[in-house]
Image (cartoon, rainbow, N blue to C red; front, side):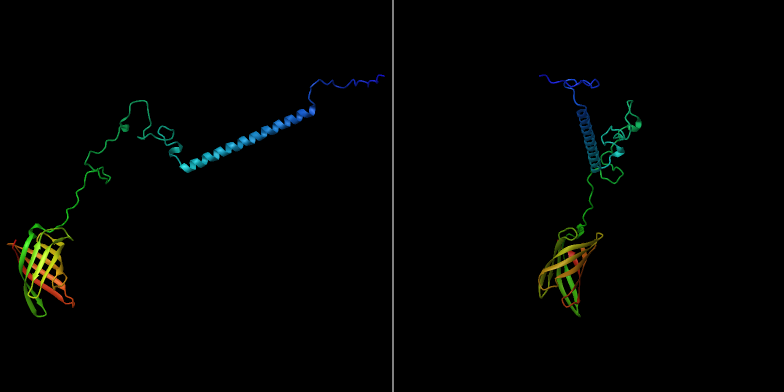
Length: 240
């Protein structure tokens, strides 16, 4: 027995095979729009990150001259000679600087490499060299002693040992060394005395003054152990 067919709706739109439902197309468009918006946001974030990284690198490296790279030829930076490059022949102002001649100062207080002459060290004048001998007179509390003094000078500079000294006394022989202290012109020197053996005051000061005819004056001053001053004078002659 055949079922009765329902009456056909004369106003219904015919459905094609495989045609999507209208509701699905709206959802697909919404998903595509959301994906595009997300991609735009990600691209904007990446661009902002790149810009911030570039600013941090520029701050770390310091500002460049003229707002451009320090490489020669970059816009905003002059050439090494400070003159813009041109295609024509170089002008007179662009000529290379001429260096100073060897041995001539550049005027800025900088040495040109030539060795400087150091001041000569002050030493014992040659006229004092040799062996000098004479008899000394020492006045001590009303008592006068006489003994032989021998000074032998071999030369040297200030604060250096320049010779030896010997006092030949009745009670003791004293031997020591002398050091150059000062030089006054070419005819007077001061020596520091250091007695190393004998019953004499350990330290004293000797002044030698040259006289004509290979003679010189000997003057000695010191302080004894009891605090009294000691003074010795002698006239010396060159013996060697």
